[in-house]
Image (cartoon, rainbow, N blue to C red):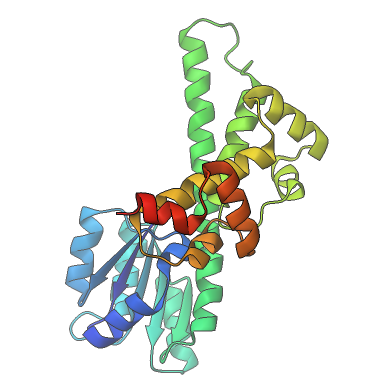
Length: 262
């Protein structure tokens, strides 16, 4: 996902960019703009999922930008930043289409709550869109092949794909079988049997495999601490993370980075 930070105060802009671990919330690219016109240029060139925008700026202000976004980029979400605590500002921000409203100086605990909520909603929307596209493509392929009623798609195959999608979107969280079963509207035991039959491995093994694969890439390509990487792949217990990582790769995380890191 991509986020755009908009503020005409360069110090405030850079502080916000550096202070927040955007990858934690799923934002792999962070753009900056110091004016509404610069923000519009970025929006025209790339798909932005979320905008954090100061209200008070020279020239066009943040409210005008949010109104423009709501009209032209309905899938892009916006959060307003301001030094003013008056309720009228919040009313204006919401009326123009903002998702939320945060006072400066920023309370980073409050910001964390807002980001957790919005990033979770964005991930869910993206997952639902992918699942819908996948089902439609499968139906189209079956219909083209003349395999009878296109509605008679292999439901277990669809379920496994949906389970994998959910795991990818929530890999940074603690994933339980109950979470998966509730999401899929399936019995836990039935879900495990279906996944094992279709993939040849258990759900737990698949989750572990994906976490180790993502952690391996981060160890090779970034300078993030091992604790941070463990948290990014949903493991809050460093010792356990080290244990499963070594079991899968033959190396501890630090050994792996020393051997394969750039």
